[in-house]
Image (cartoon, rainbow, N blue to C red; front, side):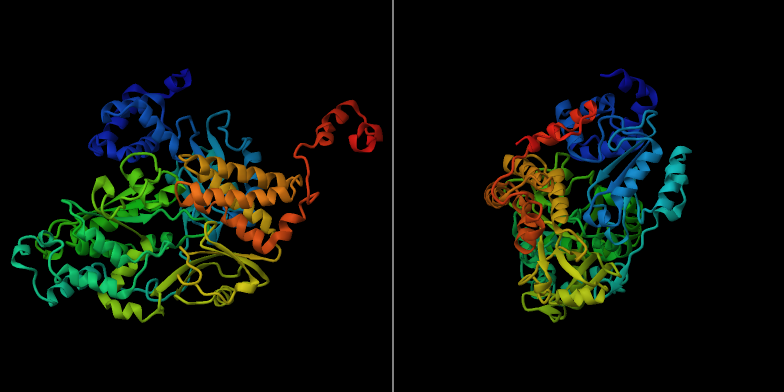
Length: 629
């Protein structure tokens, strides 16, 4: 252990804080990520004595605890400074000047990016998308989000840091985040009262008759049971045609039915609120302004499948929403909407707790998310088995995202036919789009499925649009010739991101930013993804330096095939998407960087001699290799 680590460890106070945190989480190793996150909130980082104490109390190998602490981007096993300032590195933040702002900020604080200042006060670095693309550039200060970074606002932040002011004393307006809802429909315009969807589900179940006599003591005993009661609600979900809003579009009713039918003593409902795809921010608004609708949807799901516990996986970038969400849950418990015998329904016991992520994009994949919730590194599992039969703690689990569960709450109230009346034959209901980039009115837009890209561009005030990235870097990049395509599972499926680039943008740089993102977020578990994304980054860098050739372009196509066939999870499968799409539609953006279409050496020998020429003061033609030849 280093002397610095020992010096910063206060045996009495710090050990007490760690023990109190462990007690609060009942010394349960499945809560390891939460324990580490909270210990870090108390201590500023995770010093070796704290990790040892956690390992001892949880009866885990120290190496396992260190492995988890080292996996998540927001956990620090080295001193990280009293203030940790992270600039969002999404492409839209860069388009709004985040690089220039960060450089100036570091210069004024006399710190080097990625390193703690000499006095241990501050560390400034980059992070992936923070979910503020509609009001960027965004940044996080000790995990708290600040939108709209500008020279003036950063000057205020700088002074507060230099004054060593506690974050809770900072001006509230620095942290104000707008919803920016531009177009409402049934979901963003919902005015349901808290619990209305749960009441509707219970009434619908009661209206079709009672369960078999054996189910009257506890309706959960009837699973899979007869065709009445909770199944009546499930039938409405199936009738609605609701499909998961995460992009893949798996049928929600089929998922819930499989979970309900799986034999088990305990079932779980998990809400995936880890929207890490660059360019999307709809969950941020749903969680902050429609939390009751979400929790209604989770409760309806629990009623349908017979779950007793719900878990909300909240992405680490949305940590600032934790207290308000906990307050909503408390109000619902007081109102009988959570807890024992929900709304008086005998045997309907259901409660929800929140798991806060610690900075890992891959945890948006459902099995990686489950691993994280069980206290491990967020590495996707081999499938099958699928979560509906062996999910959280090995029990049947449904995992749906925020928008899907909110939509399910609407179905419980209005019925499946009503929901199916909106959208297209294969894509019922509405879709919320997170619109960002080159447009006059970024924000959230909710449309029935089937809306064209051109209609969205007109509504948000986009002009001279060159390209639209639909569903983030793992989705599709389309050009102006495709703007009549429709947002729907049968044409352009999307998790919600809708990022616009006008004709002033360099699509090579856009693709390179997305490639950097995948390299940063690869969990490193499988070799094809870990190595393949790094090779891809290297090729893009080589082309960017003007040292590439057609060989590099062809190599990226081959690399895409390798990753598609051999990567462990969707991150690796889609890592080449932004390059492949951009090459297909904007190939000149790559080729104009090539010195030769046939071959160009990566190492610039003459350029490497530049330093020697400066040192010797020589600038005559004989000092240049190319002139000599």
